[in-house]
Image (tube, rainbow, N blue to C red):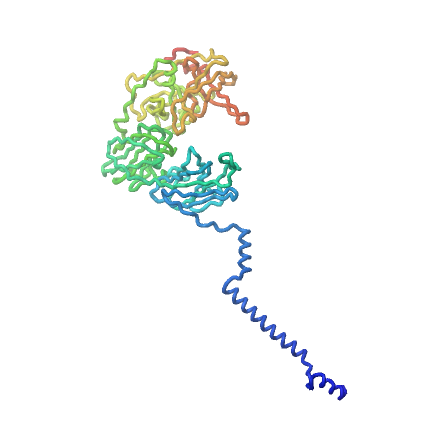
Length: 546
Protein backbone atom coordinates (compact mmCIF):
# COMPACT_ATOMS: atom_id res chain seq x y z
CA UNK A 1 0.00 0.00 0.00
CA UNK A 2 1.26 3.34 -0.87
CA UNK A 3 1.93 6.09 1.84
CA UNK A 4 -0.71 8.36 0.46
CA UNK A 5 -3.24 5.63 0.77
CA UNK A 6 -2.31 5.14 4.42
CA UNK A 7 -2.89 8.79 5.06
CA UNK A 8 -6.27 8.69 3.47
CA UNK A 9 -7.31 5.77 5.82
CA UNK A 10 -6.17 7.76 8.83
CA UNK A 11 -8.20 10.72 7.74
CA UNK A 12 -11.31 8.49 7.29
CA UNK A 13 -10.88 6.96 10.74
CA UNK A 14 -10.69 10.28 12.50
CA UNK A 15 -6.94 10.53 12.59
CA UNK A 16 -6.44 7.02 14.26
CA UNK A 17 -5.64 3.84 12.41
CA UNK A 18 -8.06 0.84 13.15
CA UNK A 19 -6.41 -2.55 13.70
CA UNK A 20 -7.81 -5.65 11.90
CA UNK A 21 -9.38 -7.52 15.07
CA UNK A 22 -12.49 -9.49 13.60
CA UNK A 23 -11.02 -12.98 14.16
CA UNK A 24 -9.93 -12.28 17.73
CA UNK A 25 -13.28 -10.74 18.56
CA UNK A 26 -15.09 -13.89 17.28
CA UNK A 27 -12.91 -16.11 19.41
CA UNK A 28 -13.58 -14.00 22.46
CA UNK A 29 -17.33 -14.04 21.93
CA UNK A 30 -17.31 -17.84 21.50
CA UNK A 31 -15.46 -18.22 24.77
CA UNK A 32 -18.03 -16.09 26.60
CA UNK A 33 -21.01 -18.00 25.11
CA UNK A 34 -19.40 -21.35 25.96
CA UNK A 35 -18.82 -20.27 29.53
CA UNK A 36 -22.46 -19.21 29.89
CA UNK A 37 -23.68 -22.51 28.40
CA UNK A 38 -21.58 -24.52 30.81
CA UNK A 39 -23.02 -22.57 33.71
CA UNK A 40 -26.56 -23.29 32.51
CA UNK A 41 -25.81 -27.00 32.17
CA UNK A 42 -24.34 -27.16 35.65
CA UNK A 43 -27.39 -25.38 37.06
CA UNK A 44 -29.75 -27.75 35.29
CA UNK A 45 -27.87 -30.74 36.70
CA UNK A 46 -28.04 -29.34 40.21
CA UNK A 47 -31.78 -28.67 39.84
CA UNK A 48 -32.48 -32.17 38.55
CA UNK A 49 -30.60 -33.64 41.54
CA UNK A 50 -32.49 -31.53 44.05
CA UNK A 51 -36.06 -31.63 42.59
CA UNK A 52 -37.66 -33.22 39.46
CA UNK A 53 -38.34 -30.61 36.83
CA UNK A 54 -41.82 -29.98 35.50
CA UNK A 55 -41.19 -31.99 32.36
CA UNK A 56 -40.12 -35.03 34.44
CA UNK A 57 -43.35 -34.83 36.50
CA UNK A 58 -45.45 -34.62 33.35
CA UNK A 59 -43.72 -37.69 31.96
CA UNK A 60 -44.39 -39.61 35.16
CA UNK A 61 -48.08 -38.70 35.04
CA UNK A 62 -48.31 -39.91 31.47
CA UNK A 63 -46.84 -43.29 32.43
CA UNK A 64 -49.34 -43.62 35.26
CA UNK A 65 -52.13 -43.36 32.74
CA UNK A 66 -50.75 -46.46 31.04
CA UNK A 67 -50.53 -48.63 34.23
CA UNK A 68 -53.03 -49.26 37.07
CA UNK A 69 -52.83 -46.72 39.84
CA UNK A 70 -52.07 -47.88 43.36
CA UNK A 71 -55.34 -48.75 45.17
CA UNK A 72 -56.11 -46.00 47.69
CA UNK A 73 -56.55 -46.94 51.34
CA UNK A 74 -60.08 -48.29 51.80
CA UNK A 75 -62.28 -46.57 54.38
CA UNK A 76 -62.69 -48.55 57.59
CA UNK A 77 -66.20 -49.62 58.59
CA UNK A 78 -66.77 -49.13 62.28
CA UNK A 79 -68.89 -51.73 64.03
CA UNK A 80 -72.51 -50.63 64.26
CA UNK A 81 -71.88 -47.35 62.45
CA UNK A 82 -73.89 -46.95 59.18
CA UNK A 83 -71.68 -45.71 56.33
CA UNK A 84 -73.03 -44.21 53.12
CA UNK A 85 -71.61 -44.65 49.65
CA UNK A 86 -72.43 -44.20 45.98
CA UNK A 87 -71.88 -46.54 43.05
CA UNK A 88 -70.98 -44.63 39.88
CA UNK A 89 -72.15 -46.98 37.16
CA UNK A 90 -70.21 -45.31 34.35
CA UNK A 91 -66.91 -45.99 36.15
CA UNK A 92 -67.74 -49.62 36.80
CA UNK A 93 -65.58 -49.69 39.91
CA UNK A 94 -66.03 -51.53 43.18
CA UNK A 95 -66.70 -49.36 46.21
CA UNK A 96 -64.54 -51.00 48.85
CA UNK A 97 -64.27 -50.82 52.62
CA UNK A 98 -62.10 -52.55 55.20
CA UNK A 99 -63.15 -54.24 58.45
CA UNK A 100 -61.26 -55.82 61.32
CA UNK A 101 -62.62 -59.18 62.52
CA UNK A 102 -61.71 -59.86 66.17
CA UNK A 103 -60.52 -63.22 67.45
CA UNK A 104 -63.70 -63.89 69.41
CA UNK A 105 -66.03 -63.26 66.44
CA UNK A 106 -68.44 -66.07 65.54
CA UNK A 107 -70.30 -64.10 62.89
CA UNK A 108 -70.01 -60.86 60.95
CA UNK A 109 -72.82 -59.29 58.99
CA UNK A 110 -73.17 -56.53 56.42
CA UNK A 111 -76.56 -54.89 56.08
CA UNK A 112 -77.36 -52.89 52.94
CA UNK A 113 -80.05 -50.23 53.38
CA UNK A 114 -81.34 -47.10 51.63
CA UNK A 115 -80.52 -48.73 48.31
CA UNK A 116 -83.13 -48.54 45.49
CA UNK A 117 -81.99 -51.66 43.59
CA UNK A 118 -80.34 -55.01 44.41
CA UNK A 119 -76.56 -54.78 44.68
CA UNK A 120 -73.75 -57.31 44.99
CA UNK A 121 -71.71 -57.59 48.17
CA UNK A 122 -68.23 -59.08 47.73
CA UNK A 123 -65.90 -60.02 50.58
CA UNK A 124 -62.23 -61.04 50.55
CA UNK A 125 -59.77 -61.71 53.32
CA UNK A 126 -56.48 -59.86 53.70
CA UNK A 127 -56.38 -57.81 50.48
CA UNK A 128 -58.62 -55.59 48.34
CA UNK A 129 -60.25 -56.85 45.15
CA UNK A 130 -59.55 -55.78 41.59
CA UNK A 131 -62.69 -57.51 40.29
CA UNK A 132 -65.62 -59.63 41.44
CA UNK A 133 -63.65 -62.77 40.52
CA UNK A 134 -61.26 -62.10 43.40
CA UNK A 135 -63.95 -62.39 46.08
CA UNK A 136 -64.01 -65.20 48.64
CA UNK A 137 -67.74 -64.59 49.18
CA UNK A 138 -70.38 -63.23 46.81
CA UNK A 139 -73.88 -62.25 47.93
CA UNK A 140 -76.77 -60.33 46.41
CA UNK A 141 -78.54 -57.94 48.76
CA UNK A 142 -82.12 -56.99 47.93
CA UNK A 143 -85.29 -55.88 49.67
CA UNK A 144 -86.09 -59.40 50.90
CA UNK A 145 -82.57 -60.31 52.02
CA UNK A 146 -80.68 -57.14 52.85
CA UNK A 147 -78.17 -58.68 55.30
CA UNK A 148 -75.32 -61.02 54.39
CA UNK A 149 -73.58 -63.13 57.04
CA UNK A 150 -70.22 -64.88 57.27
CA UNK A 151 -69.64 -67.27 60.16
CA UNK A 152 -67.25 -69.89 61.45
CA UNK A 153 -69.36 -72.43 59.53
CA UNK A 154 -69.19 -70.62 56.19
CA UNK A 155 -67.02 -71.80 53.30
CA UNK A 156 -64.33 -70.63 53.72
CA UNK A 157 -64.84 -70.16 57.48
CA UNK A 158 -64.58 -66.77 59.15
CA UNK A 159 -61.17 -66.03 60.67
CA UNK A 160 -59.52 -63.30 62.66
CA UNK A 161 -57.96 -60.48 60.64
CA UNK A 162 -58.59 -57.85 57.99
CA UNK A 163 -61.38 -58.31 55.46
CA UNK A 164 -62.30 -56.16 52.49
CA UNK A 165 -65.95 -55.75 51.54
CA UNK A 166 -67.01 -54.26 48.22
CA UNK A 167 -70.36 -53.09 46.93
CA UNK A 168 -70.98 -53.41 43.19
CA UNK A 169 -73.75 -53.70 40.65
CA UNK A 170 -73.15 -56.75 38.48
CA UNK A 171 -76.71 -57.04 37.24
CA UNK A 172 -78.19 -55.95 33.92
CA UNK A 173 -77.81 -52.40 32.68
CA UNK A 174 -79.17 -49.80 32.27
CA UNK A 175 -80.42 -49.54 35.84
CA UNK A 176 -83.95 -48.19 36.05
CA UNK A 177 -85.47 -46.72 39.21
CA UNK A 178 -89.04 -45.44 39.14
CA UNK A 179 -89.06 -45.67 35.33
CA UNK A 180 -85.93 -43.55 35.03
CA UNK A 181 -82.45 -44.63 34.04
CA UNK A 182 -79.94 -43.79 36.76
CA UNK A 183 -76.17 -43.40 36.65
CA UNK A 184 -75.61 -43.61 40.40
CA UNK A 185 -76.80 -46.02 43.11
CA UNK A 186 -76.70 -44.73 46.68
CA UNK A 187 -76.45 -47.20 49.56
CA UNK A 188 -75.74 -47.46 53.27
CA UNK A 189 -73.73 -50.35 54.70
CA UNK A 190 -73.63 -51.37 58.38
CA UNK A 191 -71.06 -53.77 59.82
CA UNK A 192 -71.91 -55.91 62.87
CA UNK A 193 -70.00 -58.56 64.85
CA UNK A 194 -71.47 -61.40 66.91
CA UNK A 195 -68.96 -62.50 69.53
CA UNK A 196 -68.71 -65.84 71.30
CA UNK A 197 -70.74 -65.94 74.45
CA UNK A 198 -69.58 -67.38 77.74
CA UNK A 199 -69.77 -71.18 77.72
CA UNK A 200 -72.71 -72.70 79.59
CA UNK A 201 -71.62 -74.97 82.42
CA UNK A 202 -73.16 -78.46 82.43
CA UNK A 203 -73.36 -81.04 85.19
CA UNK A 204 -73.16 -84.79 84.69
CA UNK A 205 -76.58 -86.29 84.01
CA UNK A 206 -78.18 -82.91 83.45
CA UNK A 207 -80.52 -82.44 80.48
CA UNK A 208 -80.14 -79.06 78.85
CA UNK A 209 -82.61 -77.69 76.30
CA UNK A 210 -81.59 -74.84 74.04
CA UNK A 211 -81.39 -73.41 70.56
CA UNK A 212 -78.78 -72.88 67.89
CA UNK A 213 -79.49 -69.61 66.12
CA UNK A 214 -78.02 -68.35 62.86
CA UNK A 215 -78.07 -64.76 64.12
CA UNK A 216 -75.88 -65.89 67.03
CA UNK A 217 -73.32 -67.60 64.82
CA UNK A 218 -75.03 -71.05 64.62
CA UNK A 219 -72.84 -72.33 67.48
CA UNK A 220 -73.66 -72.96 71.13
CA UNK A 221 -70.77 -73.69 73.52
CA UNK A 222 -70.81 -75.62 76.80
CA UNK A 223 -68.18 -76.66 79.31
CA UNK A 224 -67.98 -79.61 81.66
CA UNK A 225 -65.41 -80.52 84.31
CA UNK A 226 -64.34 -84.14 83.87
CA UNK A 227 -63.18 -85.78 87.14
CA UNK A 228 -60.06 -87.99 87.25
CA UNK A 229 -62.10 -91.15 87.83
CA UNK A 230 -64.36 -90.70 84.77
CA UNK A 231 -63.89 -93.61 82.29
CA UNK A 232 -65.63 -91.76 79.45
CA UNK A 233 -67.29 -88.52 78.44
CA UNK A 234 -70.50 -89.10 76.49
CA UNK A 235 -72.48 -86.32 74.81
CA UNK A 236 -75.91 -87.04 73.29
CA UNK A 237 -78.13 -84.78 71.18
CA UNK A 238 -81.88 -85.35 71.30
CA UNK A 239 -85.14 -83.62 70.41
CA UNK A 240 -83.44 -82.09 67.38
CA UNK A 241 -85.53 -80.38 64.71
CA UNK A 242 -82.74 -80.45 62.08
CA UNK A 243 -79.21 -81.68 61.45
CA UNK A 244 -76.75 -80.64 64.17
CA UNK A 245 -73.06 -81.46 64.61
CA UNK A 246 -71.00 -82.05 67.74
CA UNK A 247 -67.35 -81.54 68.56
CA UNK A 248 -65.34 -81.23 71.76
CA UNK A 249 -61.92 -79.90 72.76
CA UNK A 250 -59.86 -79.87 75.92
CA UNK A 251 -58.75 -76.71 77.69
CA UNK A 252 -60.15 -74.08 75.35
CA UNK A 253 -63.00 -73.69 72.86
CA UNK A 254 -62.45 -74.13 69.13
CA UNK A 255 -65.05 -72.54 66.90
CA UNK A 256 -64.49 -74.53 63.75
CA UNK A 257 -64.96 -78.28 63.58
CA UNK A 258 -61.82 -78.81 61.49
CA UNK A 259 -59.78 -77.71 64.52
CA UNK A 260 -61.27 -80.41 66.77
CA UNK A 261 -60.10 -84.03 66.95
CA UNK A 262 -63.24 -85.47 68.57
CA UNK A 263 -66.27 -84.91 66.35
CA UNK A 264 -69.68 -86.38 65.48
CA UNK A 265 -70.96 -85.44 62.02
CA UNK A 266 -73.74 -87.20 60.16
CA UNK A 267 -76.98 -86.31 58.35
CA UNK A 268 -78.89 -87.51 61.42
CA UNK A 269 -80.46 -85.27 64.03
CA UNK A 270 -79.68 -87.41 67.09
CA UNK A 271 -75.90 -87.47 67.46
CA UNK A 272 -73.61 -89.16 69.98
CA UNK A 273 -70.00 -88.21 70.74
CA UNK A 274 -68.11 -90.66 72.97
CA UNK A 275 -64.68 -89.65 74.26
CA UNK A 276 -62.48 -92.26 75.94
CA UNK A 277 -58.74 -92.62 76.62
CA UNK A 278 -58.50 -94.19 73.13
CA UNK A 279 -60.11 -91.24 71.31
CA UNK A 280 -58.13 -89.08 68.82
CA UNK A 281 -57.83 -86.50 71.60
CA UNK A 282 -57.73 -88.82 74.62
CA UNK A 283 -59.95 -88.22 77.60
CA UNK A 284 -58.22 -86.57 80.54
CA UNK A 285 -59.48 -84.83 83.65
CA UNK A 286 -60.15 -81.14 83.45
CA UNK A 287 -62.24 -78.69 81.50
CA UNK A 288 -63.76 -79.83 78.20
CA UNK A 289 -65.58 -77.54 75.81
CA UNK A 290 -68.53 -78.93 73.85
CA UNK A 291 -69.83 -77.24 70.71
CA UNK A 292 -73.24 -77.77 69.13
CA UNK A 293 -73.46 -76.31 65.61
CA UNK A 294 -75.90 -76.15 62.73
CA UNK A 295 -73.99 -76.90 59.50
CA UNK A 296 -76.68 -75.24 57.36
CA UNK A 297 -75.93 -71.98 59.20
CA UNK A 298 -79.49 -70.67 58.95
CA UNK A 299 -82.67 -70.41 61.00
CA UNK A 300 -83.24 -71.68 64.53
CA UNK A 301 -82.79 -75.31 65.64
CA UNK A 302 -84.06 -76.65 68.97
CA UNK A 303 -82.22 -79.42 70.77
CA UNK A 304 -81.70 -81.23 74.05
CA UNK A 305 -78.24 -82.16 75.31
CA UNK A 306 -77.15 -84.88 77.74
CA UNK A 307 -73.65 -85.19 79.27
CA UNK A 308 -72.60 -88.29 81.21
CA UNK A 309 -69.36 -89.92 82.38
CA UNK A 310 -70.19 -93.40 81.07
CA UNK A 311 -70.12 -95.25 77.75
CA UNK A 312 -73.77 -96.31 78.00
CA UNK A 313 -76.54 -93.94 76.88
CA UNK A 314 -78.53 -92.19 79.61
CA UNK A 315 -81.78 -93.86 80.66
CA UNK A 316 -83.85 -90.96 79.35
CA UNK A 317 -82.89 -91.84 75.76
CA UNK A 318 -83.79 -95.53 75.92
CA UNK A 319 -87.57 -95.23 75.97
CA UNK A 320 -89.19 -96.28 72.68
CA UNK A 321 -92.60 -94.64 72.28
CA UNK A 322 -95.59 -96.46 70.84
CA UNK A 323 -96.37 -95.32 67.31
CA UNK A 324 -99.90 -94.22 66.40
CA UNK A 325 -101.81 -96.38 63.91
CA UNK A 326 -104.40 -94.15 62.18
CA UNK A 327 -107.68 -95.60 60.93
CA UNK A 328 -107.65 -93.64 57.66
CA UNK A 329 -105.75 -95.59 55.00
CA UNK A 330 -103.91 -92.55 53.62
CA UNK A 331 -102.88 -91.29 57.05
CA UNK A 332 -101.79 -94.81 57.97
CA UNK A 333 -99.67 -94.95 54.80
CA UNK A 334 -98.04 -91.64 55.73
CA UNK A 335 -97.31 -92.95 59.25
CA UNK A 336 -95.83 -96.14 57.75
CA UNK A 337 -93.48 -94.25 55.41
CA UNK A 338 -90.11 -94.00 57.15
CA UNK A 339 -86.70 -92.51 56.54
CA UNK A 340 -84.01 -95.12 55.83
CA UNK A 341 -80.45 -94.00 56.51
CA UNK A 342 -76.91 -95.35 56.61
CA UNK A 343 -73.65 -93.55 57.16
CA UNK A 344 -73.57 -92.97 53.40
CA UNK A 345 -76.90 -91.14 53.03
CA UNK A 346 -80.65 -91.27 53.56
CA UNK A 347 -83.83 -91.85 51.55
CA UNK A 348 -87.24 -93.44 52.19
CA UNK A 349 -88.89 -96.78 52.92
CA UNK A 350 -92.28 -98.29 53.78
CA UNK A 351 -93.28 -100.50 56.70
CA UNK A 352 -95.08 -103.50 55.19
CA UNK A 353 -95.41 -105.67 58.31
CA UNK A 354 -96.36 -104.90 61.90
CA UNK A 355 -93.15 -106.66 63.00
CA UNK A 356 -90.96 -104.02 61.35
CA UNK A 357 -90.17 -105.19 57.82
CA UNK A 358 -89.32 -102.21 55.60
CA UNK A 359 -89.49 -102.23 51.79
CA UNK A 360 -87.09 -99.86 50.05
CA UNK A 361 -84.75 -99.56 47.06
CA UNK A 362 -81.51 -101.50 46.92
CA UNK A 363 -79.50 -98.40 46.06
CA UNK A 364 -80.61 -96.80 49.35
CA UNK A 365 -78.84 -99.51 51.40
CA UNK A 366 -76.36 -100.88 48.85
CA UNK A 367 -73.24 -100.14 50.91
CA UNK A 368 -74.48 -102.21 53.86
CA UNK A 369 -76.56 -104.84 52.03
CA UNK A 370 -73.97 -107.45 51.12
CA UNK A 371 -73.51 -109.90 54.04
CA UNK A 372 -70.12 -110.97 52.67
CA UNK A 373 -68.77 -107.54 53.63
CA UNK A 374 -67.74 -107.93 57.23
CA UNK A 375 -68.91 -104.99 59.31
CA UNK A 376 -68.52 -104.18 62.98
CA UNK A 377 -72.02 -102.71 62.86
CA UNK A 378 -74.68 -105.38 63.55
CA UNK A 379 -77.57 -103.08 62.63
CA UNK A 380 -76.17 -100.49 60.20
CA UNK A 381 -79.51 -99.17 58.93
CA UNK A 382 -81.20 -96.39 60.94
CA UNK A 383 -84.97 -96.04 60.70
CA UNK A 384 -86.61 -92.70 61.51
CA UNK A 385 -90.37 -92.30 61.91
CA UNK A 386 -92.68 -89.30 61.76
CA UNK A 387 -93.88 -88.25 65.20
CA UNK A 388 -94.98 -84.79 64.09
CA UNK A 389 -95.63 -84.08 60.36
CA UNK A 390 -94.31 -80.55 60.78
CA UNK A 391 -90.87 -81.84 61.89
CA UNK A 392 -88.25 -84.15 60.38
CA UNK A 393 -88.63 -87.82 61.38
CA UNK A 394 -87.08 -89.01 64.64
CA UNK A 395 -84.42 -91.72 64.61
CA UNK A 396 -85.80 -94.47 66.86
CA UNK A 397 -84.77 -97.84 65.39
CA UNK A 398 -81.97 -99.84 63.80
CA UNK A 399 -82.13 -102.71 61.35
CA UNK A 400 -80.28 -104.84 58.84
CA UNK A 401 -80.83 -105.84 55.22
CA UNK A 402 -82.39 -109.32 55.05
CA UNK A 403 -83.12 -109.55 51.29
CA UNK A 404 -82.06 -107.56 48.27
CA UNK A 405 -82.35 -107.78 44.50
CA UNK A 406 -79.75 -105.64 42.80
CA UNK A 407 -81.22 -105.99 39.28
CA UNK A 408 -84.72 -104.93 40.34
CA UNK A 409 -83.34 -102.30 42.75
CA UNK A 410 -85.37 -103.58 45.71
CA UNK A 411 -84.47 -104.48 49.31
CA UNK A 412 -86.08 -105.54 52.58
CA UNK A 413 -84.80 -104.24 55.93
CA UNK A 414 -85.79 -105.84 59.23
CA UNK A 415 -85.94 -103.56 62.28
CA UNK A 416 -84.12 -105.37 65.09
CA UNK A 417 -83.63 -102.91 67.96
CA UNK A 418 -83.81 -99.33 69.13
CA UNK A 419 -81.40 -96.61 68.05
CA UNK A 420 -79.11 -97.29 71.02
CA UNK A 421 -79.33 -101.09 70.50
CA UNK A 422 -81.90 -101.42 73.27
CA UNK A 423 -84.42 -104.25 72.72
CA UNK A 424 -87.83 -103.48 71.33
CA UNK A 425 -90.72 -103.53 73.82
CA UNK A 426 -92.54 -106.82 74.02
CA UNK A 427 -95.23 -107.27 71.32
CA UNK A 428 -94.25 -103.94 69.78
CA UNK A 429 -96.33 -103.19 66.66
CA UNK A 430 -95.51 -100.90 63.76
CA UNK A 431 -98.02 -99.06 61.56
CA UNK A 432 -98.21 -100.63 58.11
CA UNK A 433 -99.35 -99.42 54.74
CA UNK A 434 -102.32 -101.21 53.17
CA UNK A 435 -101.31 -103.13 50.05
CA UNK A 436 -102.95 -102.48 46.68
CA UNK A 437 -102.88 -104.15 43.28
CA UNK A 438 -100.68 -102.40 40.71
CA UNK A 439 -101.95 -104.65 37.93
CA UNK A 440 -105.29 -102.83 38.13
CA UNK A 441 -103.74 -99.40 37.50
CA UNK A 442 -104.53 -97.73 34.15
CA UNK A 443 -103.20 -94.66 32.40
CA UNK A 444 -104.74 -91.56 33.92
CA UNK A 445 -105.29 -93.14 37.37
CA UNK A 446 -104.22 -90.99 40.32
CA UNK A 447 -100.87 -91.73 41.96
CA UNK A 448 -99.57 -90.34 45.26
CA UNK A 449 -95.91 -90.40 46.30
CA UNK A 450 -94.93 -90.26 49.99
CA UNK A 451 -91.34 -89.90 51.14
CA UNK A 452 -88.60 -87.57 52.29
CA UNK A 453 -87.34 -85.76 49.16
CA UNK A 454 -84.45 -83.36 49.66
CA UNK A 455 -86.52 -80.65 48.00
CA UNK A 456 -89.19 -81.12 50.68
CA UNK A 457 -87.55 -78.68 53.11
CA UNK A 458 -85.21 -75.73 53.42
CA UNK A 459 -82.74 -77.48 55.75
CA UNK A 460 -80.58 -80.59 55.68
CA UNK A 461 -83.41 -82.72 57.05
CA UNK A 462 -86.97 -82.63 55.78
CA UNK A 463 -90.43 -83.58 57.00
CA UNK A 464 -92.59 -86.20 55.32
CA UNK A 465 -93.86 -85.00 51.92
CA UNK A 466 -96.71 -86.11 49.67
CA UNK A 467 -96.87 -85.30 45.95
CA UNK A 468 -99.55 -86.29 43.45
CA UNK A 469 -99.80 -87.12 39.76
CA UNK A 470 -101.21 -89.70 37.40
CA UNK A 471 -100.10 -92.90 35.77
CA UNK A 472 -98.51 -91.45 32.64
CA UNK A 473 -97.82 -94.80 31.00
CA UNK A 474 -95.91 -98.05 31.23
CA UNK A 475 -92.51 -99.18 29.96
CA UNK A 476 -91.47 -102.77 29.41
CA UNK A 477 -87.93 -103.35 30.69
CA UNK A 478 -85.75 -106.47 31.15
CA UNK A 479 -86.65 -106.52 34.86
CA UNK A 480 -90.40 -106.12 34.29
CA UNK A 481 -93.00 -103.50 33.43
CA UNK A 482 -92.24 -100.10 34.98
CA UNK A 483 -94.91 -97.54 35.78
CA UNK A 484 -94.39 -93.98 34.54
CA UNK A 485 -95.80 -90.99 36.41
CA UNK A 486 -95.62 -87.21 36.37
CA UNK A 487 -95.71 -87.16 40.20
CA UNK A 488 -92.50 -85.73 41.65
CA UNK A 489 -89.90 -88.32 42.62
CA UNK A 490 -86.84 -86.38 43.75
CA UNK A 491 -83.62 -87.53 45.45
CA UNK A 492 -84.68 -88.74 48.89
CA UNK A 493 -88.06 -90.03 47.66
CA UNK A 494 -86.46 -93.28 46.50
CA UNK A 495 -87.73 -96.32 48.37
CA UNK A 496 -90.86 -94.57 49.64
CA UNK A 497 -94.52 -95.26 48.98
CA UNK A 498 -96.35 -95.07 45.64
CA UNK A 499 -100.07 -95.14 46.51
CA UNK A 500 -103.30 -95.42 44.57
CA UNK A 501 -106.19 -93.03 45.15
CA UNK A 502 -107.33 -95.07 48.20
CA UNK A 503 -103.92 -94.82 49.89
CA UNK A 504 -102.89 -98.42 49.15
CA UNK A 505 -99.30 -99.31 48.29
CA UNK A 506 -98.83 -100.19 44.61
CA UNK A 507 -95.06 -99.80 44.21
CA UNK A 508 -91.74 -98.23 45.13
CA UNK A 509 -90.78 -94.77 43.74
CA UNK A 510 -87.36 -95.45 42.26
CA UNK A 511 -85.99 -92.97 39.74
CA UNK A 512 -86.60 -90.00 37.50
CA UNK A 513 -85.58 -89.19 33.96
CA UNK A 514 -84.73 -85.52 33.59
CA UNK A 515 -84.00 -83.93 30.22
CA UNK A 516 -82.89 -80.33 30.76
CA UNK A 517 -82.74 -79.63 27.03
CA UNK A 518 -86.40 -80.64 26.75
CA UNK A 519 -87.37 -78.93 30.02
CA UNK A 520 -89.13 -82.11 31.03
CA UNK A 521 -89.02 -84.99 33.48
CA UNK A 522 -90.64 -88.38 33.99
CA UNK A 523 -90.56 -90.51 37.15
CA UNK A 524 -90.58 -94.29 37.43
CA UNK A 525 -92.23 -96.63 39.92
CA UNK A 526 -91.23 -100.26 40.46
CA UNK A 527 -94.61 -101.95 41.05
CA UNK A 528 -95.16 -104.60 43.75
CA UNK A 529 -95.49 -107.19 40.99
CA UNK A 530 -91.69 -107.00 40.66
CA UNK A 531 -91.12 -108.39 44.18
CA UNK A 532 -89.52 -111.87 44.10
CA UNK A 533 -91.85 -114.70 45.05
CA UNK A 534 -89.98 -115.66 48.21
CA UNK A 535 -90.27 -112.15 49.57
CA UNK A 536 -94.00 -112.61 49.99
CA UNK A 537 -93.38 -115.27 52.62
CA UNK A 538 -91.85 -112.56 54.77
CA UNK A 539 -94.73 -110.19 54.20
CA UNK A 540 -97.09 -112.44 56.11
CA UNK A 541 -99.27 -109.60 57.33
CA UNK A 542 -100.05 -108.36 53.82
CA UNK A 543 -103.79 -108.14 53.27
CA UNK A 544 -103.55 -108.54 49.52
CA UNK A 545 -100.95 -110.12 47.26
CA UNK A 546 -101.07 -108.63 43.74
